[in-house]
Amino acid sequence: MPVNRRERTALSAVFAVLVFPVALGSQQRAGSAPAAQGAVTARVVEAASAFLGTLSAAERTRCTFDFTSSQRTGWSNLPTGIFQRNGLRFGDLTTRQRESALKLVAAALSREGYSKVTDIMNGDEELRKAGGGQTGGRTGSGIRFGLDEYYIALLGTPSATTAWMLQFGGHHLAINVTVVGPNSVMTPSLPATQPAKYTLNGQIIRPLGHENDKGFGLINAMNAAQLKRAVLNYEVKDLVLGPGADGKVIQPEGIVASNLDTGQQALLLDLIHEWVGILNDEAATAKMAEIKTNLPRTYFAWSGATKNGGIAYYRIQGPTLVIEYAPQSGDLNHIHTIYRDPTNDYGAKLTKH
Amino acid sequence: MRRLLIPFILLTTLPFASAHRTDEYLQATRLSIDLERVDLEIDLTTGVAMASEVFSWIDTNRDRQISRGEGQAYAQEVIHSLALSVDGKPLPIRFVDISFPQFREMSLGIGAIRLRATATAPAVDSGHHQVSFLNLHRPRSSVYLVNALVPANPRIQLADQRRDFGQHGLTLDYTVAGDGPSAGRLALLAGMALAGCWFLARQRHLDHSRVARCEAGSPK
Figure 1 (spheres, rainbow over the protein chains, first blue to last red):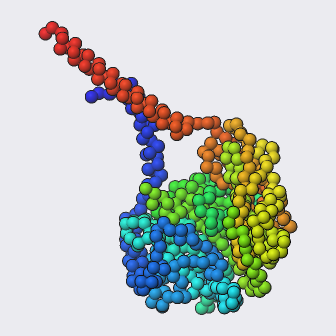
Figure 2 (figure 1 turned 45 degrees about the vertical axis):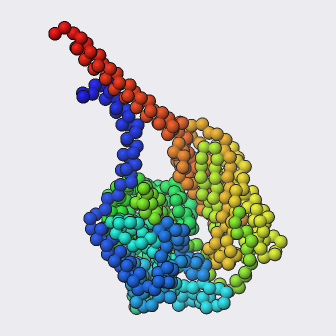
Figure 3 (figure 1 turned 90 degrees about the vertical axis):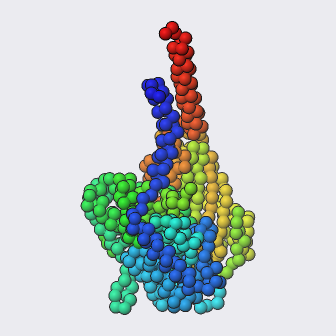
């Protein structure tokens, strides 16, 4: 039946009113994953199953939670004794169980990401040895630092098709990896460090050294006009969206990346990759592609010294990204950072039905 | 109000003090702006070295516990140190809720007192507006953060933000858009469009029937 002009107009109106918003929503929800990510998920699931296989029934019960349980948001940067983590404590695991747990963490992360995580953990061990944890043995204190004080928990059943989550953390570390089919996301996560620099086996380790140096690299690549926009005229002495600030979105500030030249944008992306790239390469590649698409709406704000070695806070904020880097109370040896995706923390976008 | 009764456990030695906030009282405020109100979320985190001092501000009868009354009195003390205005008109701030961490957490420089407050704002017309916030609670020993949350109401768009160096205050410009079509109106429009479609289709069907009847009735 031929459609006349009046009918076409009416049908167009119906389409516009009813169908377009749905289509727009679908576009926003759609996530594309490289085919290789299916292989990564299979590898992570295998590692998770192997780890669970090393546990007794009682240990398995302590280690596993429902995917939607409150454990999901029960993470912190604080040490044991101040914040009570659930899951299995590394100090209570056998060597085999511990190795298997670390294999699972390594399977979910990139090589660089896993290295960063172990550098943070070793830093906390240094803090313990240096006396940071010396109250641990005292009656009534219970504050403990060091390698034994990291916890692992699984939320949901490790699966290549349904959603589940790996939670790993301790003092100055919270890694939350949500796996949904071939996709995995690592927001929110909190990589931090104290000390920011230490020597291990004759090597100088700076767990968040790249985050510091690349930040200063970017700010020093800006001209006067760009600096005027990027540098906030007030001090920022802590994370704004740290633990407990799930779902909060603050008004962005600083210079928008569309006002950076190509080279500066590349520096910004490289800096962002320090957080995004903790996760396995395939998932990180997908996330970086999304961030690159949103780069014209991504802001970079800086507060503090612009000469490397000084104390500075910075924040990177885009439609699907928040990163903060915050030396604590003016202490260069004590750095907190946070990595969030306000649209997809805990894989919210991927698990929304 | 939760967790107001707090056992007072004095920690005398804190060799790990450097791991956390020391001699500062961090006051982090988030403002949430809506058409007819401004909500305030204020998280107060005491430094290790001044936890006892902060506790003494709150535990005014020195019984080593924070009672409901003491908690509310402290909330009012904080609120009285705040100033909030929209378009230059001061807004009274109302207490909503306060919760306290264990003193032990406070003494480690990590537990936050969470104060929630709100202010009713005069209904604003579409156009440009400005909200100003100032926090002068215990300025001698405090550091401040103040930020505006992206409004949940899509009619409100935040613009320029201005702060003093120490973030005691924030002045924020924002724009209120005209009252656009609501979801209800969109549904009404959709319904009307569907009805139009149905009417046109029916008309077309009737036209065809009429033509067919005419053709059937015409001489061959």
